[in-house]
Image 1 (tube, helix red, strand yellow):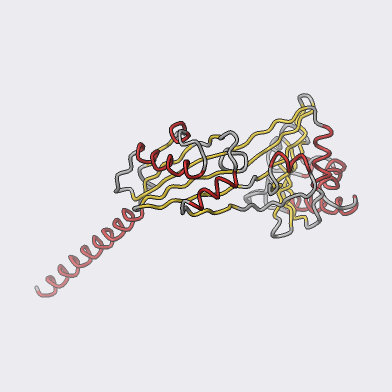
Image 2 (spheres, rainbow, N blue to C red):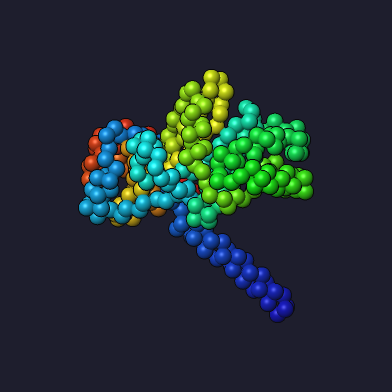
Length: 300
C-alpha cells in the first residue's frame, strides 16, 4: 500500500513538474511576443539626407548608418551625382540568355567577389553543357576584373570542375560559384554595359537604399548593376514602444514599430509618433498619413 502511495505521489509530482515547465515556457513565449507595424516605402521629393539625420540626432533619436558588403568605385562622376558620394556597388550581372546569366557579387571586406552562374533552363541535373561558352565567360570575367584571358580561363575551368565533381543533390549544386580575389574593374564593366545599351531602366526600394539599373539593347537584356545608397535607421524608444524610420539618400522612407503583444497598439497613435519623428527630421509630417501600415499582432 505504501509503495502504491509513493508511486502515486511520484506520478503526481511528475505531472506537476511537466505542467510547471509548460507554464514557464508559455510565460517566456508570451513575454517575448511582440506586436508590430511595418510599412511600404515612399519617396519624399527633395529630402536632404544628411540634414534629416542631423535633425534626428538633435531630437535625441538614435541614428545608425547601415553599411553594405560592396565598395565605392572612385571617379564615376555620373554615378556620384545621381547616387551620392558614398554609394556602393553591390553586384553586376551579365545575361547570356533569358534564363542563363552570370552574377558577380562584391564582398569588399573579405576582398573577394563571388561569381555565380544561373542556368534556369537546364533540364535535370546541371552539366557543363548547360553553361555559357568558355569564350563568353572569359570575356565577361576580363571585363569585370583586372585579369588576363589565361587567368579568366582558369576561373572558368574551376567553375566547370565544380559542376563535374559536385553532388547534384547538394543545395546550390545548380548554381555553381567561384571566389575571385582579383581587383574589380567596375569602371570597365559599367562602361561596357552603358555603351551597348539602348535603354536603361532604374528601380529602387525606398528606405532600403537598394537601387538597380537594368541595361537593354532593343528587346535583349544585357545585364544589370545593383547599388546600395547611403542609408540609415533612426530609432526612438519611449514607454516600451520602439519606432524606427529607415531613410536613404534618394529620399526613400519606410517605417516600423513594435511593442509587447499584450499592450495597446493603436494605428492612430503610431502615426502620431511618426509624424513627430518626421517633423524633427525635416520630412513632411503628412507623410505619416500616406504610408501604408501593416499590423501583426504576434510573432507566433
